[in-house]
Image (cartoon, rainbow, N blue to C red; front, side, top):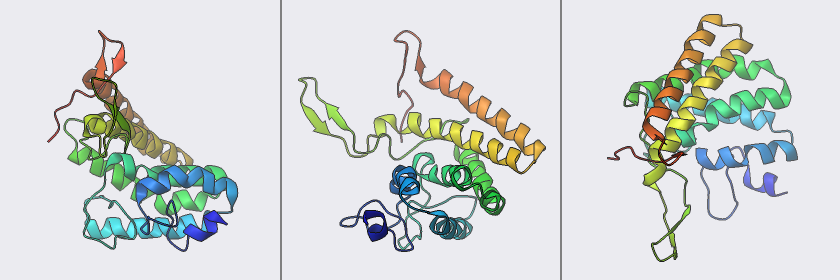
Length: 212
């Protein structure tokens, strides 16, 4: 009943405060919805809206929410990751190759947009670990709404995954040239990610990229 109550042509995450199809919210709820109901018709319809919104924005970008009722511009690699994830995982859940055939170019264009707007394969994001709590020097929990401190790290990690998914989708469609191109792109992003974000002295990944 919860899923049916909040998904009337536009998928979203809750029935009381979110009335738009925020891409980040759908990302989080995608698996739960598929386990609960047969979601293929809704995902197919919504992905058509994503594709249309991409055409309207141009250059392969997609907006923060779809349908884009507002004047929001392009979303981040983190929230926009629902596009490649929904196409690949939708295919895995339902075994319908038509989803891949229909939306492959949309996913590919999104990946190319991320590449073209990156700084040598590092993607500057708006949101990092969205609404995560922070801690002061005294150990007090504070609210950090947009967490820009982690925005580039998380966005670039999703850029890696986006390129990997394009290669996986290309393999399903037997587009061998694209398989090779996007596997190489994923490797290049991964190498750049390690160079920029891995702190060898601490043995951890951490945000160290200048934000603007």
